[in-house]
Length: 428
Image (cartoon, rainbow, N blue to C red; front, side, top):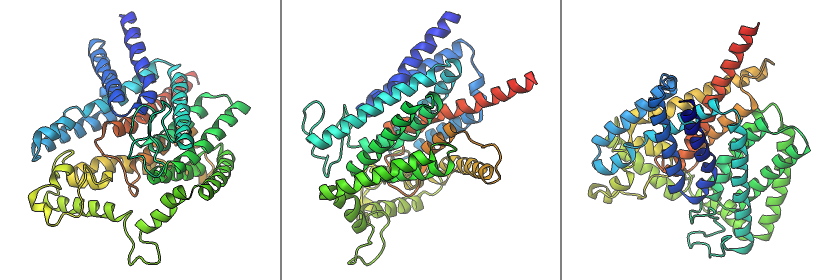
């Protein structure tokens, strides 16, 4: 039986180590990987009677969430389409628990995952800079027509979300490096290089949301980390100098990131009013509010925005239609209603409490409430849950993998620290 456990663990760990690279291929491959991890863990936990992970607040939370999503789909106008999302949404939560389990069982997995993510991240950077300088993919293919204004693609996909990948994986990578690398000159060179190259490439990608997320995580890290503050400030100075030079050389990038943003926000001289993000986004948000008013309690159904904005009764008043409203909170009120948005507000409240406790520990000079690794993990969650900027689809597979991946690491840090304190108390 011990041999079977080890085989199960090794197989899941290999699949987990492939996830960072698989995310550069688009949504399909990483979804297959995390689904396999979740399935294997479910089979293993039943066969080996591993039950402690199912008697946790996190499991109760995701169980309640998934039951609600299934019920929500029943009342959707497009039941089958909604069920395609809600029926298998539980795989993301089980994936987070499986990651938590593996980190508890395999002490070397954190370091192995650090190298896996670092390799994938460096490949993403090399791919981005190659596309910028040569205006083609690393395989010699022309950039897709959607890659306008220097929008850069993932390595093995034509999805123009490279900046999004970098912005949202950077805090996790930074935290893992802090946790696993020895503090020597190589350590500092790696961190500074990654920060500067990421800052500049995200700006080059003209993904303004990704640029905003890098800014948010940078501010949070500067305020909350115990170490590396001066290093991050130094990297910001170098990054800003590089960005200024690039803006001077490439007016297209400057126009997209700066001039076009001011125009969309209504901050130019000819603008009559302020606009929420852009006229297109504002229209989608207003639609969400209108759809919410029609069914405020449970919403119109999981992943249903693309359908309800095409309904005949909405055509005359429709200000904009898309597959989703490009903001997870507006999507939540339109699709899963007041009950559904509570599942977003609960983690937001929890994170707020953690941050306030950490600030209190800093102000009163006590031992830090959060470790630097945990601070970086919290930065991952803040980047995913930030309410003001545009977002990908709340139920998008690729998006949810990035949502749930850091959760497994965070749950591990909680149990690991608890067990360490318990061990110390027993020794004393």
